Image 1 (cartoon, rainbow, N blue to C red):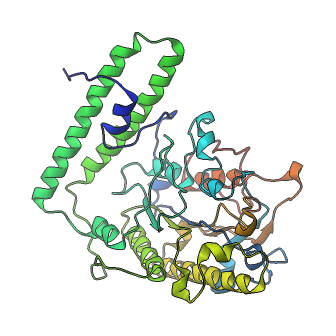
Image 2: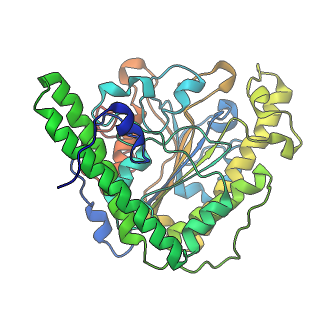
Image 3: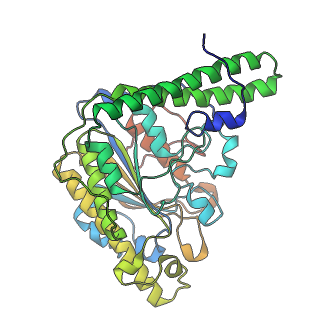
Length: 415
């Protein structure tokens, strides 16, 4: 019999090496999409300081829109993307609400939702299960935007070192290191077993409300057990060979890291090391490397033409890197099976607005609409979470709700 250990919140949070909170957990199923010969993939890209609306949104709707400065670098892919106006989560809070971009829920409000503030990428990852080595690849420049969260309400920090990501993807660990890792995973599994035994004994002494809380802890435990099992399954499987030279640990400019992370995400998708990848650009992105002032200061433009011009340079740089990424996926012939979300949980950073968010979808084999202007009247507005639900269904999920969704939104026959 497994030895029981005293049950406490601190032990639940720290004893396994994973952060555990109080989720409500549903059964995990692998979506039908993964029975296809070529699986579907999802990429989510977020920028903390948003995009200046005048640089992002076209003045006219439809496929014949006049490209703005942010969209001009994407002109080669005009027929493969849709820009949305008037979508948001009705959140307020400026920087504090940016982390709701892929969730529709601020973390302090997450306890009122069954899946807490689970993000789009993590919800999609539950469809993949252990089919890939990594359920998700989460990357970021200077800690990103805090946009990725598990169904337990735990933040998923991005990998900010390209060399570390390269090693995880392509460098096989020696036998000795794998033996140590196997022992570590076994120890964590034993701790979880003991926690479950302690919880079972404690459950008989609790009232109904406390039993409900304990059940939620146990749901978190099962989620960690699932991740541990996936790690064990992949421990001895050889990693794919990299078509590029090993990425070294060295100081890099942020502008170079953005391009490198896009390259590594493309390789991860091509080698089926993962089917979900994210990239976050944080508030500390060094715009001095573009011969500009500090990014945060520029974002508080106050409609000053000089600062808006600087934002135009930054945002064109970011969309150029996205355009290069799309071209690479097309060359690899996986673009039509890859849906890309590009945008931010902030619209105009000068006013700290979280309304009318900049949102762009690309790829996925969809019949794209150019610039789609959604209803702006409050009683007719479409929640952005409805679009995220449709994206999940495109990915293979049978979910009927996501975050604050009120239904689906499939203007390009998503799902």
